[in-house]
Length: 450
Figure 1 (cartoon, rainbow, N blue to C red):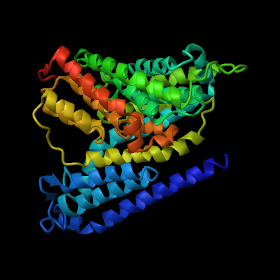
Figure 2: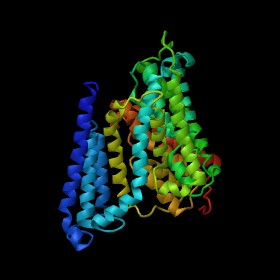
Figure 3: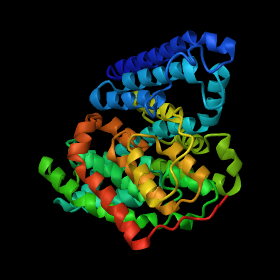
Figure 4: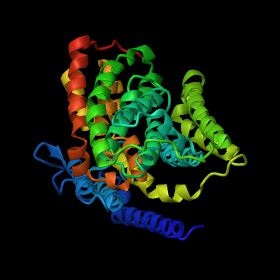
């Protein structure tokens, strides 16, 4: 093991232990609540809202603000925020499914499949991206890309296409690896934001391209009822591609020729294809033949790791990437868990105005529970919703799994200020593309589907 890997493992382990101790401390403080079986020992003694806003949301907002300000300490902020929210639930308001340990256990049993899938996929796709990087394919990519700013446009388009049939995390990470090579590691934060936006746009109209669209499909919506999200997605891609690529070309020009004397490791390419095929196959097979399994096991994540382990004798994975990606993965899971604890019991009446607002909310609030709420409520135009909650998460680096995954490759992207100021065109693209879709197609809510 290299000298750089050991400190990384030590830091990740230290952070994980700190998280465990903080969570244990919060639980210990709340022990009286378990004995009483009430919402919490402080219930009725402290206000549960400040004005119309529940304290739960204020704690979550402070966590997100901390992530925005202390972007070099995001894991610590996320763990602290989750701990504060858990303590509030234990001591005062209880959980959605009950009080104390029983309430937390019920909540975890309801959410664990989503959490486990994200954990397995983020780490699995980190291994996959390293396979792809060391296959030397990224070194050959410059030969097929234009040698000016149009090269950046073509790369974004490739990520868009990949995301239509791959998970958007994988598409974003593959795009990030290629960008890292063709720009010699000097990739602007604006272009990183564009890569995330392209991957989220590409998955918005495909039920195998994004977790949220897969959820919509699982719930009984026809894949054809999300397909028109591509009307907005194509507009969004056109808007982000030019400014992002021009700014990147100015920041650091694209490499004009493939690296000479390097051959492609086709065995490693085969491993990449096998892992991706397994991810797609397990997703499609489970949805078509064993839909009940999707609520019981993290099917896609298990499929990815089964492929990684089965192909390991052919090409050994770089296991060190798992430890170096662990901290970023745990950060995302803390945010997702915090979001799932919010008392969002209902949404405003379904309309295109509400849906457009959900896109902005998804930039800071995990889009998986938002999609679940929308499915439970019904009455949405599912293609419009798919674009809103899918592409909307691109407006912040932690607004989508693809953003969190790619900032493991480019840690400088973990700055809300730089993401918004250098990737301003993502926000413009969301607003313009959404309005174009509404003006062209209108709002057509679908009848109950399940």
